[in-house]
Length: 214
Image 1 (cartoon, rainbow, N blue to C red):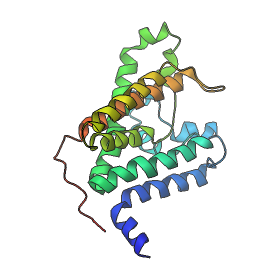
Image 2: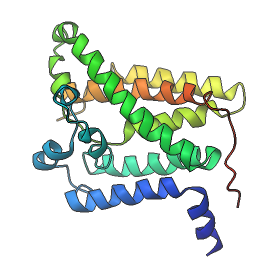
Image 3: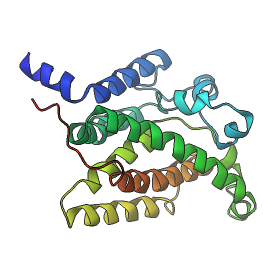
């Protein structure tokens, strides 16, 4: 009971996100199955949604995944990255990092893909602006950036550099069988943006530790 009390006090935001992910997976049947077109079209976000004022999709897209292994991957990263960020900095900082950078990343991504339309066409990626996707990855990779930046020197710079190179390299990897190249490119670009935004956000507003000590 004491351990449960400590978790509730130290990582309430992480536990709320995990509960939301499991609830959404139950409703959409995506814990073990791939998301259906019905739910993807209803909850997913595409960069061109920004121009039609469908901002609620930025929120709904973060609660559901494409299903199967991707769902459990999201559960792991929320528990690990968001949990560590919240443990180190408190629930308010973790929540602002997750949702603030999730919003910022998807908005910047929409602008970037819109401006780069002609260039993307030459690579066969012009559909990226229309690619509808789901998942909380921008938020949890932002929190991973925050955790990386809070490590002691030189581990903060080393971990940040290695992870950033990994996100950059992912852009050049071919899509998996059955995976849309446009969706993969859009998601990989969002990850490449979210992680450094989370990393550099560590320098904003001071670096006070979580005061909710067990």
